[in-house]
Length: 281
Image (tube, rainbow, N blue to C red; front, top):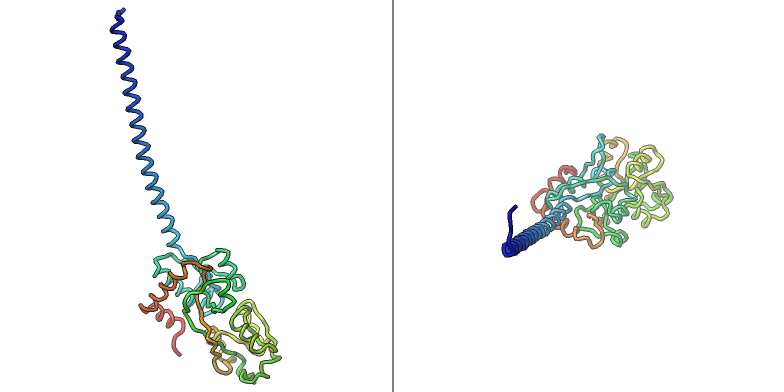
């Protein structure tokens, strides 16, 4: 057995104590450094993550259109959305360096859907009206519209004569500038309202109404396959009707869309899209 003197025992205990203190100090310092490093990295990661989330949100723009208002917007036989509004939407997203997600929404629910945050904007040949401006904000106009009456070629319907409209069955799409103008201008007309423009055209074609009022370009588009039997009656009705993009109230997206709209008009993109869908006669 190894003998240990009192002095050497005390020295050993002191050495052991110093060893424990040193180890504890080193351990504390290591833990402190690790926590500091981790804390700094965590803050950086949080900042980077927040920026990434912001960029992710900025890169996706969900736009609603009706999908039943050719040539402005329609749904093809494969279920894909197309038309002037769809191409304008894609051009605006490209200008804003955002990913476009375009969805269809029935006309009656299109503003409620925007207010409920189902999508970010509406690009759907929507006329700017005081009533709508109370619910949403509008961008600068991107199209100016006029109205026309359509009837059969052999019809005596003459929209320049009030008696030809009052009491007659006239078709119009509900909640549109066309129906509002007709109700205000000819309150005695027998106005037949339809959820979609296509349904109104169907009743005109079947003879269930005597005439129809419509935005000019959708009427021309429909007449391209019905020109043998139907025609525009009277002159264009100019009512200073402007189409604009709708966004939620006080949404900064309005300014971004206005800037993008100005840019695609300046670089010729807008004119190319317009010519594609509305070629000069």
